Amino acid sequence: MKEKRLFQRLEDLAVTLSKEKHTLALLALGSVGVERDRADEFSDLDFFVIVEDEYKQKYIDDLSWLSETFPLAYQFKNTKDGFKILFEDGIYGEFAVFGQSDMPSVTQPNGRLIWKKETYQYDDLTKMKGQIPKIKNDDIDFAINEALTNIYVGLLRTLRGERLSGYIYIESYALNRILSIVHHYETESPIYEDAFGVERRFEKHYPDFSKQLNKMLSGYKNIGLSAEVMLNYIDSIYPINKRMKDEIKQLIIRVNQTSL
Image 1 (cartoon, helix red, strand yellow):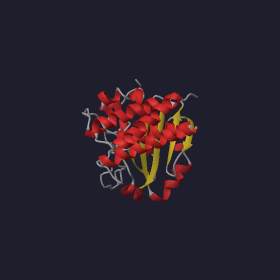
Image 2 (cartoon, helix red, strand yellow):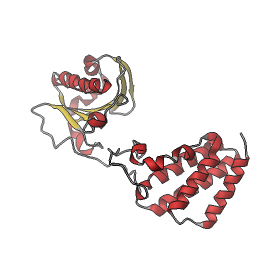
Image 3 (cartoon, one colour):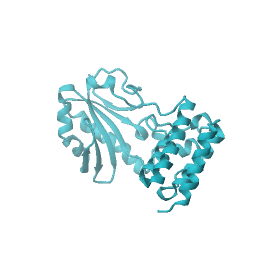
Image 4 (cartoon, helix red, strand yellow):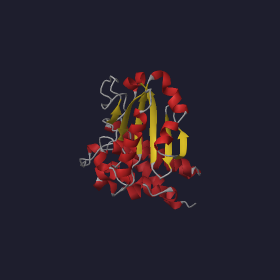
């Protein structure tokens, strides 16, 4: 099973890092971290490597410590601290290298400590740190009206011939506003929540609401239907402005009458 290989890769990496003079700790995140009971064949390898401050750049510039653990087939440096990688056996991963002094300000979900050097004194690496982005919205009026105006502008852009812009306004901007307040109106399933994206495991969190997603996301050729389903949902949960609702309905009719 792939998940067993993921956990074994972490153990193997811990052995490699333990032989290095300037490494301090290995922290696993996500489904290979504290949420390991949700690991499956679609999981990847997320981890942090903590090293002595003055050697941080060395471990970023030279990944021989990683390829020694298992050969790399692909590597892409996507941040100043981290990489996206693919091992030769098909395991995909994302990781970052941090110096000891970086850790108090690193934004991270709860992690699982795989290994640390005995001499390394740390302030509980496994606890949440840094500023976590707010993915849920308690200002319902703001979110609703942002969604409405996104739908309105998106329909106007579509009618002007800017269908791509209209699509993005409706199926991205407006939908994201709706997703940010769904927790106020729908029953949530008790499943691990992602601190960085409400869309992660959304279908498991909100199975009833998710049945509407196929129509809210009707696609580039069916923007009018997406707008209509979103408008109807908003109207069912919140007292929206009648004039704005009527204007949007008229635009939806016009969009549905147009063809590519």
